[in-house]
Image (tube, rainbow, N blue to C red; front, side):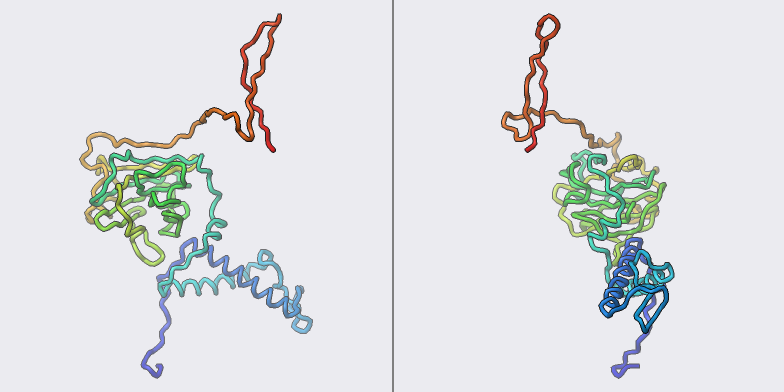
Length: 323
């Protein structure tokens, strides 16, 4: 008991579970802690030795982190994991930096190999509460959510201000950049996508369970401008398969009755007698005229004579002139 009457009590961390990205952060912190310790020892004159030798300042752990024995690595990770869990338990939001996020993420697929699917812009909704589902067939690099009608297929989905999407392959939400959200999906999972345009909020579910932020909020996105409304959208990476169900027949939804129906959300395609028109991206080669003053390319015509001196059709040949 303190003089002011406050009685310290241990923080209950039994319900604090770290997300996979936070576990990556623990590994980064453990490596950094070892590097700081090693740097300090080297300044004090310590060197590597097979055995601990206090007199001659030798230490077997004075090696690069990658060469450290697994027992010591685990000890470092365990202590730092408890520190991170304590911060999370007090309500702090802890995430790796953007650079660490890029380093730990799987190899990114070129935008040219990603296909976008979105509802025709004339179906954009500007009011009400709407719901649709996305079935994860392959479980790889895919994103799903809501986008403004002006969303462009040549910009990474969620990298600008046009889209609000969930990427379950890495457990991230995307809007003008990425942040950790919810948990990762598996093949066969179903994502529920809900938008409430009356209070400007968006919610995502995975197999009927609400996905939450690191701060414990169920709102993936909030306080955005309605502008020209929103349409369902998804993008699929190379060889990925997903199925979007807009709810023309609400009975085909798998988790609508668990989370969505009771909250007042309506199927996006409710009362539509025909399939909703969809647009998808498809990149094809584009041919353009080469200007005469192009800095790197010169077009020349070659007059080729055939047998007996007969003239053959002239054929254009492109020659690259790099300086």
